[in-house]
Amino acid sequence: MELIRRQKALAEGHTDDELGRQCKSGALVRVRPGTYAAGAGFAELSAQDRYLLRIRSTAAAHNANIAISHVSAAALLGLPLWNVDLRRVHLTRASSSGGRITQARHLHASPLDAADCTTIGDLTVTSPQRTVVDVGRTEDFEQSVVIGDAAVRTYYGIDPAAVIATMSGWPGLPAARRVCAFLDGRSESVGESRSRVLLSRIGLPTPELQHQVFSADGLLLGRADFSFPEFGVLGEFDGRIKYGRLLRPGRTAGDAVFEEKRREDALRDAGWEMVRWTWSDLDEPQDLRRRFDRAIARGRARI
Image (cartoon, rainbow, N blue to C red; front, side, top):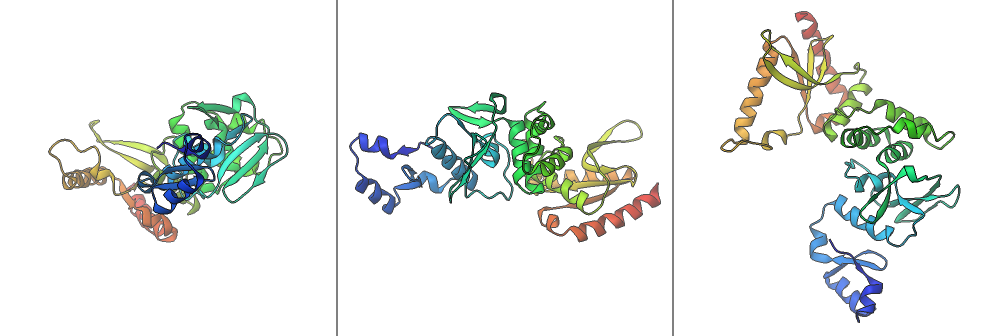
């Protein structure tokens, strides 16, 4: 969506009164002071897309010594923002001092080398690995893992640990180390990343991810999001969207559900117990733990 700058609008003959009237009528929306967008298109944008507009408009008001950073960089890098506060645009100034927080902007001050930055269009943005570390230093663990897993999966070969090695004494570094040690690019979605965090919190051992199960004669029966071979238990996060996506022509979501049921039956016949959970279960950790305990007991009886 195109941004309308006040300065340019005035240069083209429009007036502040005219811009104000258009905002009042809904024809324009004020993205930030001095920057507007078409009201109709803005209303259709998701929260993250509106945030991207605010990032672009805020960045345009700053000089070249500042990079878009933290969760704002994550948004521009195409990483998922789950349960993240989008009230402020985050920027980093290459300085040891001068940080500032306002209602709509958080200006961080820290060392910022050329290697810490990349460009997206005409915007200077912290690199994926620097972004992962900055997010890990400042956001909660679960939100940071969601972003970090996606970064490791999307930007192959990044090394957040190398960035951490240059940050001796920086605020939030222990939290960032914990996040980076936990990351795994084999997590394929927000739900799977959140599930890994939850499985750890309820005391289960580290699962194998994207585990392929074969029959005795070598036929692939299926792939599970999580597996605990020592217990004979598989785990699946069910986001309730997988049945409707990538359907072959002529197939319905009901066909996909039936096929998934057959797959699960084959995995059980091969000697595995299965635990499934959905978004709502991620907020009920003790219930999920009890379900795993029952599955583990059954799985051990089979082994």
